[in-house]
Image 1 (cartoon, helix red, strand yellow):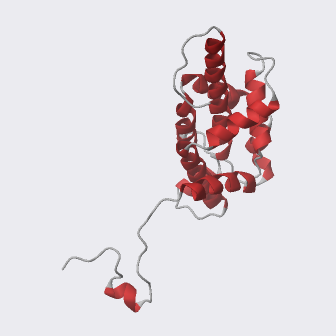
Image 2 (spheres, rainbow, N blue to C red; image 1 turned 30 degrees about the vertical axis):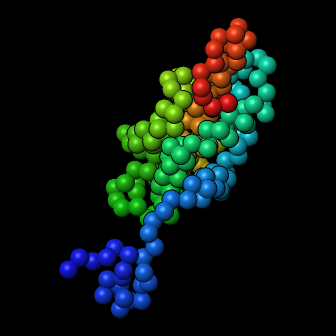
Image 3 (tube, helix red, strand yellow; image 1 turned 90 degrees about the vertical axis):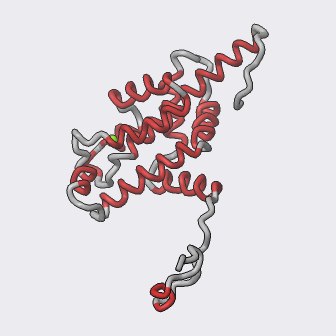
Amino acid sequence: MMQNPEQPTPKEEKMGIPERQAYSLNSRKVAEATRSWLQQRGVQIEEIAELVLFLQKKYYPGLTMEECIHNVEKVLEKREVQNAVLTGIQLDVLAEEGKLLSPLQEMIKNDEGLYGVDEILALSIVNVYGSIGLTNFGYVDKLKPGVLERLNDKNLGPVHTFLDDIVGAIASAASSRIAHNKQSEREVEIELPKEPGDD
Ligand code: MG
């Protein structure tokens, strides 16, 4: 006999597990969890915006902190970005609490040199706004300015194996977004037809 997926199995019934709720995604919850987890792990939006300003001010001397914050906020609205943030932070937290299985536990806890899944996960953020983001990502990863220096300090206690790459990636994606938008603005100025896209 086919089991109705929403009905508890006899075993679940015996254990008092109620009828299963059909899974439905709540986008607002995902967005809120993303913001909340970044904050709980000690990363402020302004610090990511400072990285953006650092990356872009040489190209756009008039760029303001407000614009950088706005662009970071826009990046954080993307589901691909939220997924990467939640996944990466979850792994950092579990490693910090010693709850992963060996040998992954030790690899993430010690930010093992040959473990590169943190960078690969962060690329799913960078990719949202194309290849300019990739160049910036490599650059901040080498230089580790601002908040990245703190996140990389292994003496401070918390595990940030994933978070440092995630933060660098968000800043890189926001930088890329600025570059694309500045180009569109320029094209409007010289009266080229505008392509449909976000603002
Ligand atoms: Mg890392």
